[in-house]
Image (cartoon, rainbow, N blue to C red; front, side, top):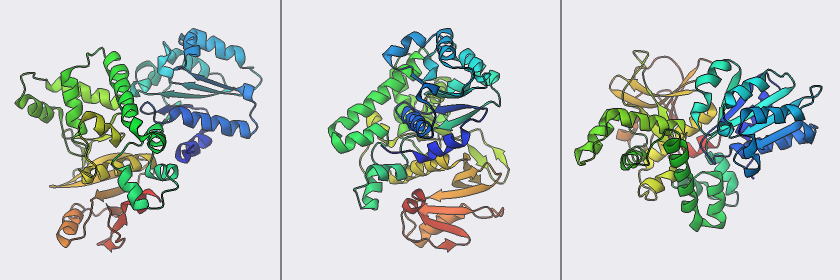
Length: 400
């Protein structure tokens, strides 16, 4: 089992802090496994088994607890007021009125509460109002390249492994299947895709799994790393179709895909004007293997955008708010606003082995004089600096 140290380290820091720990992410990204690993660490540290309550609401035997009052009563009955308890509630959104239950448990000082959910709306509405400033979110994605390499520890050729990584799925179980029953991987990914589209989108928002929804999904999956808007998607899809789709419908679909953690949105930021722009966001796909469900994903095709997708999620794991930088008429692939008020800039390219391509990439940084670090990530093996811009091999960077 891959330990997912990045997430466990955060949970260790948050242990016994007066905050609700909210672990979010797409279905089957490993949230439950991370909680299990953390639970095992608690047991090894001396916490009694009876002082850990772990409930997964996707398990049949726990369906009777999906009423918030029944769940609350069950937990309070088991939790002795004179001892400390660790409560793990997995896929909490399946509990009716779970916000009331979470708020009721939070006020009990002998309870350290951890909850997971597969929809960003977990933290909207009443819960966010009730718990403002009293929770912290950990977003779980599919395997990073470092975790993926750990899963394939017998493969000595890191370059070959990386090429495999950017062309296949990183869902933990898909990675396991690829080593034992590779012929089942696509079936497994399709099951995740169908579950997210049917349960987390169609049922939640009372939609039919329509032809238009599929068209939007196909379009945006095929446009990973390209600037898009609801308007230009509508213009493209309506051009050669007798089934028109409105700008507002497309906007809703994009929001639903982001709320279900299928897509992640990066907004554009004007570096010189110091303002957030409202048009032409970019969207990144939580797992590149999902492209195989939507359209033909040829091995080693569209490598530039795949690399950009990989870099986006690695930056997300390392912390900070990620934007697409606009520098006059140039675009910076990523501008990361760090929590310590520092900033980093990144350009991503497959190769800059010829001088013309190198000059084009570094032009995006021209006249940015704020002295924050600037990086050019490529698959080249040249790690030199150019005009203060640090060139780094993407694989080296991912394994730092």
